Length: 567
Image 1 (cartoon, one colour):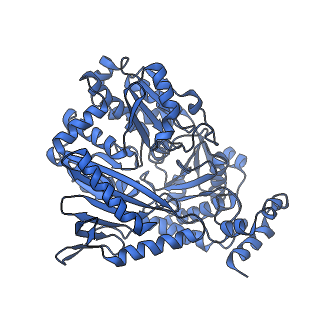
Image 2: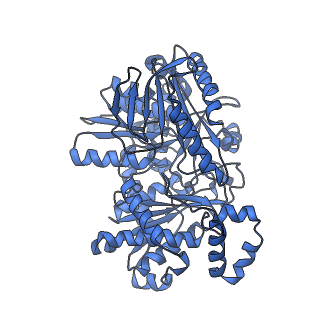
Image 3: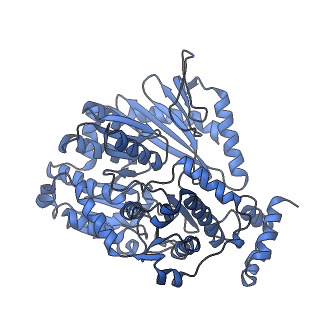
């Protein structure tokens, strides 16, 4: 009997009889998809399609993963158990029930949980871990994935996502569990009565908002133009609405139009094709509203409100969606020119992010630190700075519209980004220019950097195998020339080797990760990696040109050359 059939039979025999018809209705192909493998921890915990099976998100998988976490906490000792776990959730199907199921598993082990009474954003969960001095945190979310997905992020005591070593140990504990159906759970009402589950209300949000004040650089800007500059905001049907309103209000920006239909929590994301504010179509309703109210800048947070999309209105029905790299460049340019920098300022970015912010940083004495993809690595670098006292982060970012300005949160924080970008927009508004004009000034000073990311999907059970095969083939090809550009350096983060064109090999000071990066003589580069959360390979390309058209032309040629290798 094949492994998926064994898994299916075990599941069928233990599942409630009233749920078995749902399994009976599945086709053989659907059964193989659902039971042929197991969800595994990626760069952001678990993420998968909702449904029955070992390769799906369901109560059994929540129980199993939380049981693994409980055993990991027990291994840390009694003090860790007493410190407890903070738990939050977004608007997705079953998010709230999954959160309480996790608390019930922890409660069975005598581990306290701080569970939010209502849906709340990921950055607030990260903050809550630190606020309660909890040993860990859980966020039930699948970020911007389609409506039929959910996920389970695990956070460490610093409020950052579990680092690789802890995640590996947690995975060991999860894999030791023979059947999720054998896991015992406590009664939620009894746990609340005895105080093992504590419901979290407004207190944490108030404390978060107090810290958020520190993100504002120049309060007088909002006093001058806070009622003149006009913003549009969308929560993409997620968890961001209430905190966005409070953040704008506290920062002094009062001229805000909300996309009301998208500021209602909706697990089906009824008005958007994909609730991902990196995409143009996510802003369709925002643009309609912007035309009605004559808005200047459009903001959108993703469902768990850790990432911020920014779209600039440059004229009647004329819009420019900023990339994460462009937004980070605008943020950094403002911070280095308008704020009082600490003694040893640092920029932390992922290795697949643009080098334009590097040029800005170096011109103003800001040290640049490059880390692996995954905001946990930015959090790790902040922790290192705190231990050594060597530097102070002024901005951390990933190209996928994730930003952090102040370290009271240790994950991407859309509200820190929202408050800062509102101020950046206000600064340029007062100077008589929009954010696209401001970007052009940055390009003129630091160079025309053009960045592009594409993804190639590999769905189904064979997808993982195909991705591994492609990465192996590209790695073995030892590319020396791409699109008539000579490769002067190849960084293989899996083997942790950096090889230059002259044959010299150096060791990369990073944890091992399945990423390849090729650098060209003029500073352009290409990187590729399999996604840690979805079945796709991501190709990142960056070029510097004498003009934006020149840089874009280079990236066009990179893409044409690389597509044949990954499709």
